[in-house]
Image 1 (cartoon, one colour):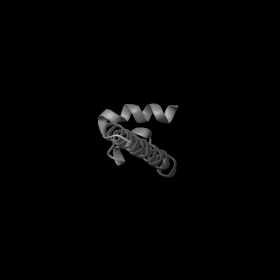
Image 2 (tube, rainbow, N blue to C red; image 1 turned 180 degrees about the vertical axis):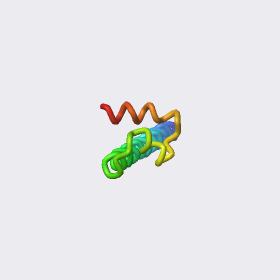
Image 3 (cartoon, rainbow, N blue to C red; image 1 turned 90 degrees about the vertical axis):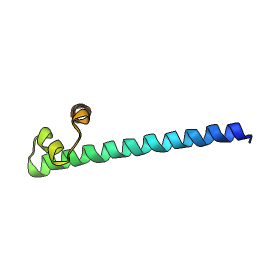
Length: 67
């Protein structure tokens, strides 16, 4: 494999790992929100506050909870 191909492959792997990690964090956060809502009878807003979800991400998780 030439150096260019190897570099492209390594970059692709790095991007894939980064996206996979981001998706894993999203799923974990979403599950934590749901668990707090169910167990402690919190609203989605309250659960996100407890977890300190950044303001700019709250809309995303609210949409995920509905979908």
